[in-house]
Structures are given as C-alpha cells and as structure tokens.
Image 1 (cartoon, rainbow, N blue to C red):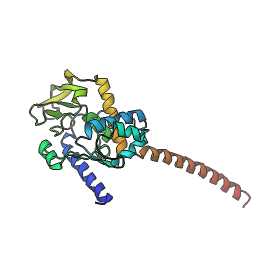
Image 2: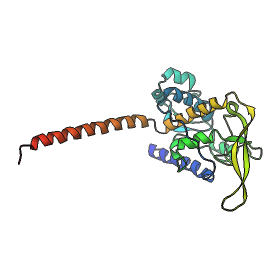
Image 3: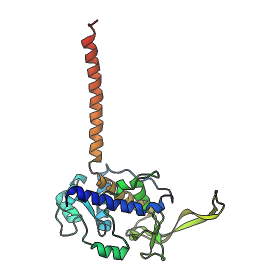
Image 4: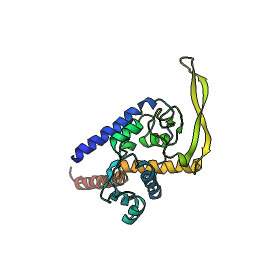
Length: 256
C-alpha cells in the first residue's frame, strides 16, 4: 500500500473517531490543555505514558520509533524504555491486536492516534483541549460493557486505562431548570473521589498534560521547527524590504 493510501486510511479512521464523538459536541466545556510541545522533559514523559498505556490498543502507524530521537532521547534509551516489542527502531508504532478481535471486545476498532490531536478541534477548543478533557473525565458506569463512561464522550467504548493512576471518581450533578423549556435537567457540578489512585489530582492532571503534549507533537513533529523557520524568514524579508526601500530611494534621489 502506498504512503498516500496509508495516510488516507489513517485520516478516515481518525474521522470515524471524530464522528463517533459528535454526540458530545454540546456537552461539557473543554478544559485548556497546557502547551508543552517545546518541553522535552514533558514530551519524554508523555511518550512513556503513550507506549505503556495507549500503544496496547491504539496504533500510531505514521510515527517511527527513530523519530523519538527528536525528543532528546538516544537510540539506547528508546530501545530500553520505549521499544517494548520485537519491533526495530525503523518500524512504525503499530499494535499486534487483531482488528476483528478488537471490534468484538470493544464494539469498534480502536482508532490510530497519529493525527488525533489535529482532527478533534472545534469551536470549543483545540484537539489537545478535547484530549486533555476526555482523559480526565472518565467515571465508573456499571451499565456500560467496559464499566466506564466519559463526560466528554458519552457511551465511549474505551475503558479508563489510566484509572490506577487517577483512582475511581463519580460525577456530581445538580438539578436545574432549562431556561428555554423550563424542564428539569442535570448540570455537572464536580467530582467525588471514590477510591484513590497512585497519583494526586494535580499529579494526574500534569501526567495527562504531558501525554496530550506528546500526542500533539506526534501529530506534527516539525511544527515547532516550521514556526521557528517561518519567523526567521519573515524577519529576513522585513529587513530585506527595508534595505531595498532605502537603496531604491538612494538610487533615484538625483533623478528628476
């Protein structure tokens, strides 16, 4: 399969993930994700979380392990800490899970995450904002097959894979009257911790921020370089324009 066809397939899978989440579009407000794509320590932590918790089910088929060197990691560090399968450094981040089994277990095939941070942006915020909110709003729901639900993505098929870090929580709702219909509806007020996790709330939010930053970086690894080069080019063009304008004035000053 050509790279163009692989990219098209990845975009189709990502859009399937987006379409499935549209039911939550008018739900809770998205929290602002920390912007840490220039923080190598945060990106390294995010890569570790991704490999240990996400790569079991979700592929990143357009990202090679060798690209992780851009995060300041050596090839040996990647082999020792992030390459947990028999793959080589030149391989892409794919999972061995059979798609048929995945659909049987989860009701849908887990989407590829290479571009997910770019595909979920809307008027409510960036794709990073959505992911940051989504990964922090899981709660226990025994009526679901996985035993989990999510405020940002109601009836999601994915369980909370980070629950040991976060602990178990349940949402608290207040009964309020809808301003338009006058009917009584539920409004989200906050969380109640049911069982503690291995991290505090602050630590967990920071860890999720690191993971989301990595997903954001993975969706466009050259973004920061592109912006830096673009700023340099614009500065050069501005300086060149000024010099050209002064040279033009000097050249024509004696011409009547």
